[in-house]
Length: 468
Image (cartoon, rainbow, N blue to C red; front, side, top):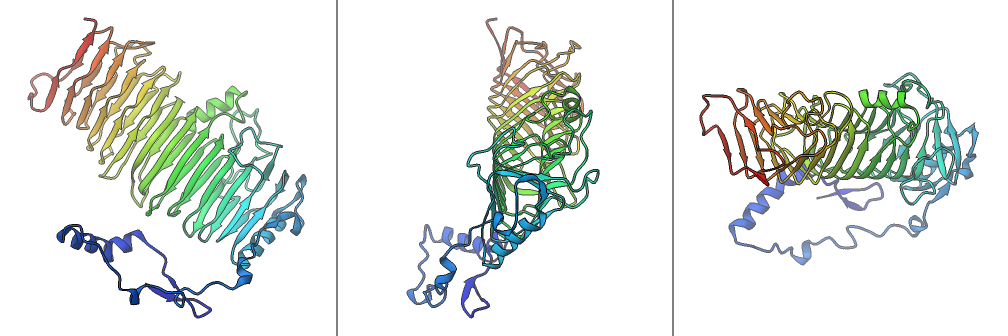
């Protein structure tokens, strides 16, 4: 479907996955299925030709890359660069889009910026930087101290906005304080689709990236130490992608008090409503919750999560409060507890209704339990390695099944560290359980289940103890 442009030409209307599936896609797929594997043939006369999508004027192909220095920016760490950067971004947008380049330097900002559609704000880095405070291209925001709900430092407005190759460092955040000063989001999506954040260091923001309504977002190669929340996703209805994230104590690693605060309050990734979120090769260290799946007024998440890592998680590496019915698919995860007494690897709350499936994941470190599984949605762990639970030596099981219909199959319960003796404890509230084909190392496979329950409800079979 075409629509007229301002110059009289035509262009395709903005593609929407839901509109496509609802209006034509599903019907077309059904027709194709009914006719075998039919090939759709578009008559030549109906195909778009050059007259429908005219070539742009030659002047539009000359490029619009400009340096912020052209508009008076100065990376000396003292001059306020808010106006100069905004002029450069607005200029690029007015030319139809382009790249605004930022040479190496320390650029102070006393205000905030709007990143308009079709523009890229680009620094010197071509790989994810770390420990960035005064090397390469570094932006220094100062506005909004003490105002976590204030105006974000950066707001994207429009389609195809990219932030790339720079570091963001809050110079007035005190690395030796016992807790951080609140600030607004470093970047918040405002409107449009296809927001990209690439090769960026979020050195010490209070709140990192807010991706609400950011359809088809692409976040890749972002390092740093966001202190309260690293990345937040909500109302993403068209497949967002997050990959190669590394949140680690790059800034306050020498301050135990700050680390303790982050461990008590911080979250690496917090994900609410997202339809088909793809998260790949991400790692967070020292947060209260590594990956937190929640429900906003707009709903919860389903998605594919591969190569997740969460180390030294205060409360838990993964907490699922809510998920959509299609569920969360978590593969190749590595999850480690910390020294807090009740630290766990996986917590599925009683509020959850969607499925949670973990395959080929490994849990270790000083955990109280590997997992506490509640809720109505089915939970499965298949081919996982499980070790180091019952660190408080209270007789805790690796897994407490306290509601969720659960399958634990082909897993290895290894005796290492604080490993307790009991593998699984089933409470009367557990809807059902299948515990089969698992192996323990060094201990007899022990499962405690309620007495007098039907064997159809709890199936426990073919579990072995290696060497016994």
